[in-house]
Length: 536
Image (cartoon, rainbow, N blue to C red):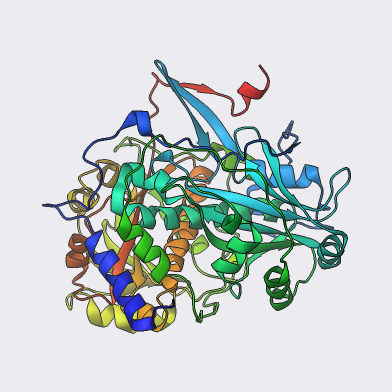
């Protein structure tokens, strides 16, 4: 039974309000971490045939600019080898860490608490030595699990399109085990990071990747056979989106219609169990249902041209930057510095434009950056705002503190100084007292246009978080390119951030915090290569 728009909006708004952290009360979660019940970080389909993917022996000689520029010449052909490279650089493992008896893997795509709720499925055409099929990516084995074979007509259609599909899903239990009711937020952050990671790696192959907004999650769940599976309680996956990867022009309407018409796929293999026991967070189920699309709106309008490429370049190669990406745990306050050129360049890269990675995202930009500048040479410390959609400027001016300056530093960048001063202590306080927000070169909150957007279409609630994850992915790679390190911060006091900005009501909401500085490595932690376990 469908829920009308006003009720869906009320459910989404109630979820968002209830899951806010406050200095006197945090959002509900389990009272302690049940380590014996921690979900397995890898989804497996037991007994499914495996397609082993080759690992890259060496990085390609691609400059930093290749992250954003279109590759000159012909794109890579679609093959097991090129798909393997794309997945390794986006959803694969980046390293293993070991401390005492504990050992854990890191991945190319960031995740809240390194819990990785995002799963990746590929819909592939006929390839050399591999029939057209639906597969699931296993990052631990760097292998594709064959979920269903496609028939001849389906394979021919895929071949005629010259591309393949990527379907991303989320397992909320992986986040809820640790973060409780706030887990839905973190799943959506992670989905945005995964979109960014995949878009960058596709770009290095010379491929375009675009999210297809016309198709429903219900259609994709049927296509993946999720309605044929018996899920363990609380461990069900939820489809988030379909992306199309291609080396030539595609027709999004035709792709959406084709997926909707496929009825004869057979799935036999069951998903593995992730935890012995579970806690059921009903509020996550409610917001999941309420934020499903009915009539999706607001296709992307590009506000800014591609950033100037001449201001900054990195000494690190493109693939090295991707492989280096980590989330910092501690910063050296004295060494956490950058200069105005590098800082401005990183901000320029977060602006919505018709290039990588924001061309993957077919929705209007709704997210802006409220930045606490701590140590940027050539720029006064203080509170700044990067306005990523010019149409929102007057609303932001009107609804924030009346005494803010709103002085634009340069015409080439929509960065406004609101108030000068030392904001280190306030940045730390806002981020649940985490020192990294105050010890960094700069910290920020991602401020989203909220009530007006969600009243029109509650299904845009997850997309707001996807946009923050995309912005965060850019900041992660730009930090690494500058020999710094970034950290996404999901724990922050939502309404305290709004008070600092002077915001009341729900027209603007802070959805994600971030910080960039010079990291301090922990020498006690041993690092191993990402796939050393496959070579034993």
